[in-house]
Amino acid sequence: MTAAHCKAKSYTVFLGLHTYYDKNKQILSVKEEYQHGDFDENYYRNDIMLLKLSSKAKLNNNVKPIALADKSNASVPKSCIVSGWGQTSLKNKQMSLTLMEANVTLEKEMCTEEKVYCSKGETGPGQGDSGGPLVCEGGKAYGLVSASRKLPSGCIVYKYTKIPDYSQWIDNIIKHNLSGS
Image 1 (cartoon, rainbow, N blue to C red):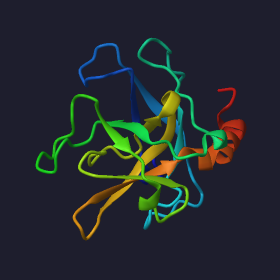
Image 2 (image 1 turned 90 degrees about the vertical axis):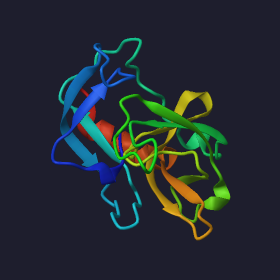
Image 3 (image 1 turned 135 degrees about the vertical axis):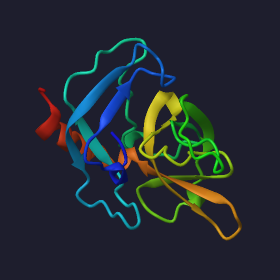
Image 4 (image 1 turned 180 degrees about the horizontal axis):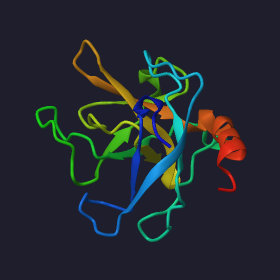
């Protein structure tokens, strides 16, 4: 699962690594992509896409499936962690070689759109973290890093695609396209 605006001609998926040079990482290609049909590239609405791997991942201590929050987890969680390989500062244009994470607090009043969570502040996802997970209560994935914008006050608001609002879409894609292979 990733953000729809991350659509590319081809993909390489790295699993099980904390630093880029980890020797036990799995490297897989993607067989098919399933971008949300109502994705709006101008406003990043419905910014979600599923990827079908070309082969099965080997589950181990470093590669595990994550539970997705669903409609029963509809309330806005407060404390979450976002992670990714993006830039660690605006001055440094290089991607991180170590998986980074940041604690974020979701704020309902910051969101002007439906189907998204928002956080604000100096701490949040970096450039290049798009499609990464927003993990909250109970270790479930609640969102995907989508976009950010700078307010006139200078404050940055980060937007995350709200996974529970796409539960039915995800289930339908898996049922009709991904199961059994």
